Length: 50
Image (tube, rainbow, N blue to C red; front, top):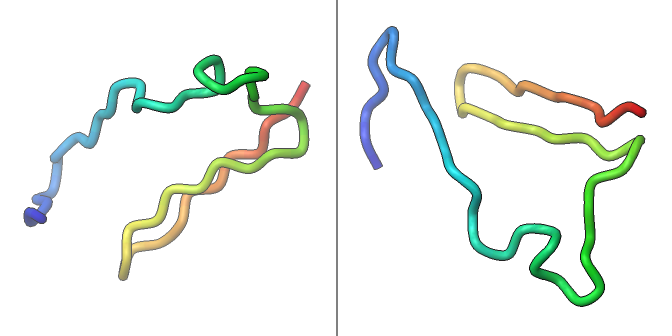
C-alpha cells in the first residue's frame, strides 16, 4: 500500500473481467450501487439510475 496525502488523486482504468467479458455479458442496471470506501474516512455510494 501507500500513504495518500491531501490533494492526491486516485484514478483507475478498466479492470480485467469487465461486464462485456462475461458470457453472457453482465452490465450494471438501475438499482445497483457502486461503493468506494476509504477506511477511517468514509464511504462514497452512487446508485445506478435510469
